[in-house]
Amino acid sequence: MAIQILTVSQVTNTISRVISDGIGPVSVQGEISNYKLHSSGHRYFTLKDEGAQISCVMWRSRTLNFIPADGMMVVVSGNITVYPQRGNYQIECTSMKPVGQGDLYIAFEALKEKLQQKGYFDISRKRSIPELPLRIGVSTSPTGAAIQDIITTCKRRFPPAIILFRPTLVQGDGSAEDIVEAINDLNKEDVDVIIVGRGGGSLEDLWAYNMEITADAIFNSKVPVISAVGHETDFTIADFVADLRAATPTAAAEIVTPFTIDYILNVLNNSKIDLTNFIKRHIEDFESNIKSLIDSHPFKFVLEKIKNKIQLLDEMESKMIMLSKHRFETLKNKLISYEQQCKSLNPISPLDKGFALLQSKNKYIGNNETLGNYIEVDLIRKNENVNVLIQKVIRK
Image (cartoon, rainbow, N blue to C red; front, side, top):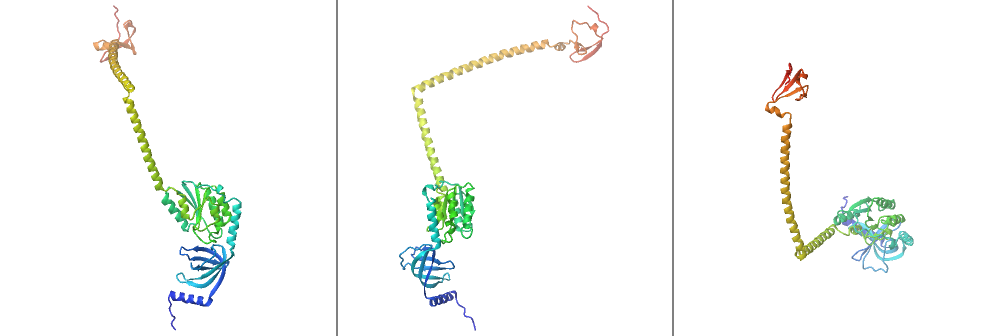
């Protein structure tokens, strides 16, 4: 027997009929999680207990006398249906009544009250965010969209900013402890501001940011902290303790870059224009004052005196030149005279006239000394030296 081949739609429709006909209307009690009021007016949420969860939808035509919120314990009535596009079953709610608050919501409110009494939420202790932080610490998941949104926004708005990213567990076991470590690590990195955040999620997903140890780490941080946890409608204990809450991680990135690079360049350009105009006006004022001073009678009198002094200097310069030339000629003539005297006194100069010098053992023999005292002498002429023996000396 051949097996009938069905389309996905046929299988889904069959399941839908089986569930609808087999179960019928139901009333289910559970805790609301991940509640979302769509812009269309329809309500989408998850109903859960400690062991399971089921998706729910409530159309805008159904009226309520209260505002649902995550953590509320409610009883919903309706029919089990199948959402074909996703292939999952859901409760199509016709009514909803609150029966109390869920455990997480009660714990949230209890911690909120405790920390408020301790002054963790006081406006007076909250620090202002630096106007132009250059080193921005970020604690969030390395795999979520939050870190990409923060980096993209910061680099687009203010590229000089340095982002120090500390990858962090944001949900599950050990996530609160890792968030505390991340805040402490970033405090050691000399950052100007810290963004602590993640993308949206259910109350359970965000629970690490509702822990007291997380609140303590934010409270004790030496650096201002911006909490950017979840979507705009999500609120956590971290939001209340932080120095500033941002609706989303992208909003946090915009807060820490209040002045974009284009804005700063525009301010600098305008400042340059203002400074140039200021200097130009002052130069024009100085020129005008100088012109007025030049045209004044006292200044003209001073100019005349200066001109006279210049002329006197020119005359003195001419005299100095003449005196210098005369002095130079006098010294030159004296030098020539000294040169002639030196030449005349030079014992070698008579050699030019044919005379000769007598020398014995490198000692000149003068006119007052007889040659009889020597056996041999050197006869020095201009172009030759002769050694002679003394045989006989005839005295006059």
